[in-house]
Amino acid sequence: MLVLDGVTRKFGALTAVSAASFEVSRGSFVGIIGRSGAGKSTLLRMINRLVDPSAGRILFDGRDVTSLRGRELRLWRARAAMIFQQFNLVGRLDVLTNVLTGRLAEVATWRAITRSWADSDKAIAFSALEQFEIGVLAAQRAEELSGGQQQRVAIARAMVQRPDLILADEPVASLVPRNTKIVMDALRRLNKQYGITVQCNQHTLDLARSYCDRLIGMASGRIVFDAAPEMLTDEAARELYGLEADDVLGGASMPEAYEKKQGLPELGQAAAA
Image 1: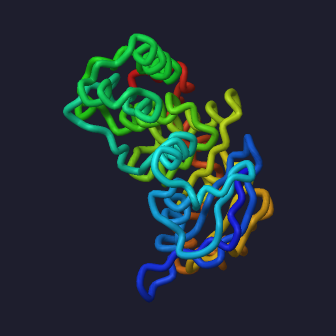
Image 2 (image 1 turned 120 degrees about the vertical axis):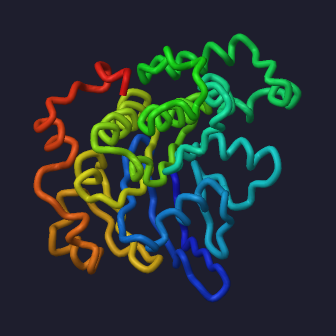
């Protein structure tokens, strides 16, 4: 179980996250929602320890994550895999090598520096690519792929870390609707088939309501909503998003509405996306 206990982060006079406290059970798919600048990204980065809390504690299975240093911190970052909006791939490297970087916490340093990956690690990486129907892209340079393909490579990289927790920071914000569905379906597959806890920042409420089993709403760095998606009424969303409400509210969920309009295939049929 992941526990945040009064977690705060200040940048000078600015309080990005203020006294955030909540628990996340294993196997959950939690959406973090709120307007731009609400503190969602800072919250995820503190859990991964890319950003250190100014106050409070983060615990996982009773262990204080905020006290970890050195190798123990590197191992925690492997267990709490990050997926970023802009993919964070090395464009000049091939897809397989990008995925293999997810194994860095478990391989000898000399192997990583010389790229002398063991056959067992290559097999793990290729298997992850196959899971998302992109094994055929293993030898291509990452910069040659579409946005949806690059994000699936990033998810495969996270998968080979063998994480307990995936922290996805608006992973579909830069994708077209068709690729949005493919990527969100990939995250849901990791959650449902492998029991990996997913905590996903979302700006679009339709997506959050469609994929998440719990929503945590943030405003001005504070937790102001925490309940099942069906409890988030349009009125509550308008209070949460203010002037941005019209941009995030809609009718049918985006993936379903777009799929019906375009006649899109499911993930397993969309390898070329």
